[in-house]
Amino acid sequence: MEKRYLAPSEVAQAIIASSETKASLSITRMLILGIMAGIYIGLGGYAYIVVMQTLGNIDAGLMKFFGAFVFPVGLMLVVFSGSELFTGNNLMTMGLMDKKITLTGMLKNWIFVYIGNFIGSVILAYIIYKSQLVSKDILATTLDLGLAKTSLSFQAAFLRGVLCNILVVLAVWTASASLDIGSRILSVWFPVMLFILSGFEHCVANMFTLPLARFSGLNITWSHIWITNLIPVTLGNIVGGGIIIPVAYYITYILPAKKDSQ
Image: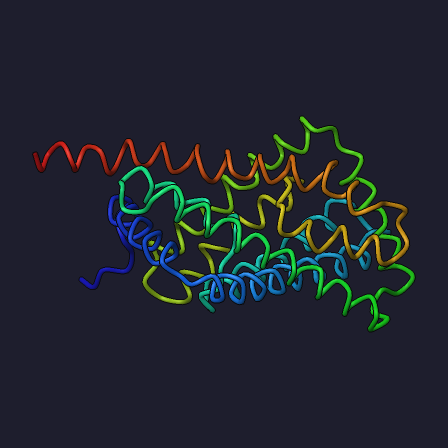
């Protein structure tokens, strides 16, 4: 019978091998692929806002569900195009634990991919704003989202970031386990839909939403965006996607194999 997916231990090894590739990318490639990923996530974020404003006056549950239904397209585009997303790359800590990459190599990737994600997200937000796509109803939804995100306490933003990236890296994990495109689509779709539906916080998605809200008239400064949301959410994303999931699965899948081989 043809094998349709990788076992968890095989996925763990694939993540480690991917970490080596990512750490060896040139800064130029990291930035370009990071910019593209920021744009893709932003496109998913804009679709989310469009659906939300359409259903907002009908039912709050349906509004969240259908908004969450379209958002995963952004991560699908990232995965299928081979772009670089900071939150997904938090899994590189598995390569670090396995001594296949250095701390310097991992941090270089994280920093330049993060910068690229931010540039791409802001560029898309500005283009959408200048294209007059922020209509009256979309404006209201955008401003409400921006206000809600910048009104969170540090603790709330951090913890929502932790929960969010547990699901995002699990989406990357399950996509890595899938051997055909249909399975990969479903693997990405449901974990990402779950984090959006649950109201968790994703730093790259917020790199699009908050600048769009600012361009559209929300009274927030760039420093306010960073201090109230992006910094605590980024730290939470790192804990969820760079510590909790990689450490758990490195201990359970990689270390036993190393002991058996000794």
